[in-house]
Amino acid sequence: MKIICLACLVILSLIATLVGPHWINPFHMSGLDGDILTQLRVPRVLFAAVIGAMLGISGSIYQLTLKNPLADSFTTGAASSSALGAVLAISLGVGGYWIPVCAFATGMTGLLLVYRLSQTQGRINPITMILAGVVMNIIASAIISFSKYYFEDSLNAIVYWLMGGIFLVTWDRLLLCVLLFGVIYLYLQRRSMELNILALDEQSAQSLGVDVKKLRSTSFILSTLLVSVAVSFSGIIGFVGLIVPHISRSLFGSDMRHNIFYSSVLGSGLLVLSDAFSRVVIPGGAELPVGIVTAVLGGMFFFYLLQSRREHFWNG
Image 1 (tube, rainbow, N blue to C red):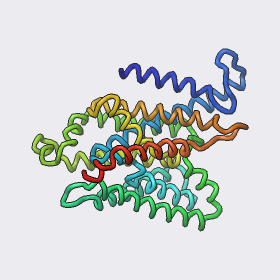
Image 2: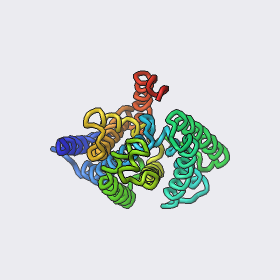
Image 3: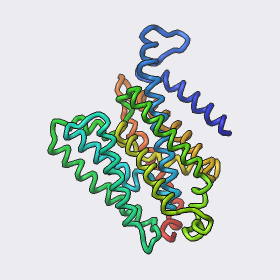
């Protein structure tokens, strides 16, 4: 099944490289078509695939460690707090790799604050965590709005970036994301059995030899690192980390030995498909930011979860 999923992702990615304001016929390509394909489409599709995998796997880890099916980088406040650092860096004229550094610093701070507020007598309260994440989103959005108001020279760049999209792709950014994702993916796969045990209550997990606090903290940091880098390079692309883990668990089970892989592959496929759709939905060559597409899909899925499982969430 894993080979089939990878094959589907490869086929989808190949098709996505041909789709856009200028459609490419692979059997009759001109020199211009070749340049567009190699210099624009291929790196963009690869970048979308890596960013989607980063968001998908981070959402899976958030939902497991927080034991909350509504947890992802958006609802926990990690994405908005990471965006806050990136926006401040853009507003102050700090460019380059300082943007992901600032995004990680504020993202980690926001997530730790949400995590602390959601604890009740040493245990995580799922309802409180969502409320704390909403408050973090409000605070971060307020500061971002102030930045847009005060730093007028950077307004267009901030607004364009906040909508989320695979716009500015460079090979060095792509390489950084691939290396970062690869290292964290291998680490999580090696700890997949311990992560499965982490799904139990803390006393049971500790009795089985799992250092719960260390594993949870490490997983938090690595997931937030993935989110902050993704946000700093592509803006806010919400709800990928919410949708993908649910689909993965529904189709392939909750075993983290498999869920980590499928969350990554499905996250890649979802963002590649959404990015391809964003390039063709508006006629005339204009592109819709992919963050709008994923927000619509994620919002509908969010309402579905609340409608179908609201009693379980409220009581549990």
